[in-house]
Image (cartoon, rainbow, N blue to C red; front, side, top):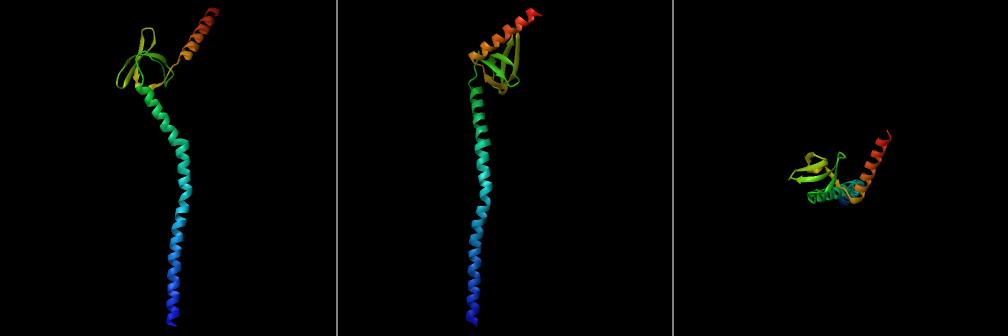
Length: 130
């Protein structure tokens, strides 16, 4: 009788040990959806944002006097002076604005300047008609 009791105790310990091993595996499997969601967020949100920030920082570091830029508020201007944290833009004849360097959104290209000149011509034509 005592050997039978010992066998049942040994069997019970063996099954509980096996249950904890499979419980550990199910614990890892229960974390799998969260890991998958994090990976998806990383590739869809975090990584593109970091890439955009690096590109913006490279643009700000490459700014030089004479660059034609557009600010985050939509002001078009030409850089006349660059400081460590500030940029001075000439936005019209005898009109200069000093702003934070981070507010420069992008550098204008030649094509955008041509489009701007076309818009000015249209505005002048409208003024003449009125």
